[in-house]
Image (cartoon, rainbow, N blue to C red; front, side, top):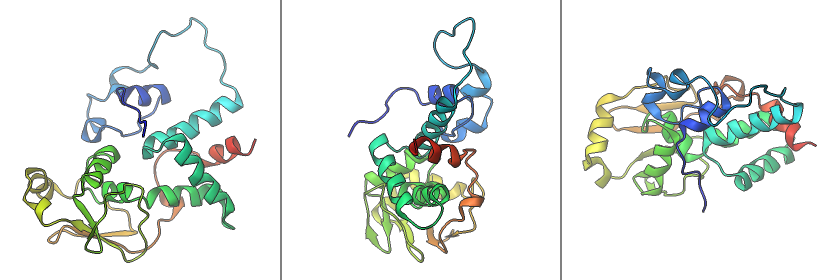
Length: 208
């Protein structure tokens, strides 16, 4: 499957906000958005005013890039959210947050979602005791996300286990630090998902 392979800091600079794609570096002065406060590439002397459609497109791209989802897969998530009786935008965020790679990131098992996706793809994580190597796997309430016994012997696991917690834990997840296992207490409340995006613009983009 095709995936973006260029420097991810360019995505943050193009969006003009931090998308937190580089883990701990995004919280330091080394962050590209802090060091270079202009979009990548040659900029025209006079910039045109962004159209309404352009604003909606940019917001949609931001959501895609934050969660590391390709366009076709993102559209499937949106179509599923639109079929629900609940509000489309908030449910879309809920679908994205309950991806296994996103949950692994939220549990502080990884510094970024891309790193979490790699850990899942390499088969280091388990759900309810069974290995799951599909990053888009959707977790459910009471699912327990843990580590394979063999993966607990790796240098990464030893270092990571000694540094938790790194970021605030969302209230819909619970982490047993001794067992290094997280439990899904409830589905995430979309109103409390702080990712700096206006999902309403995403809905308007696909509604045209």
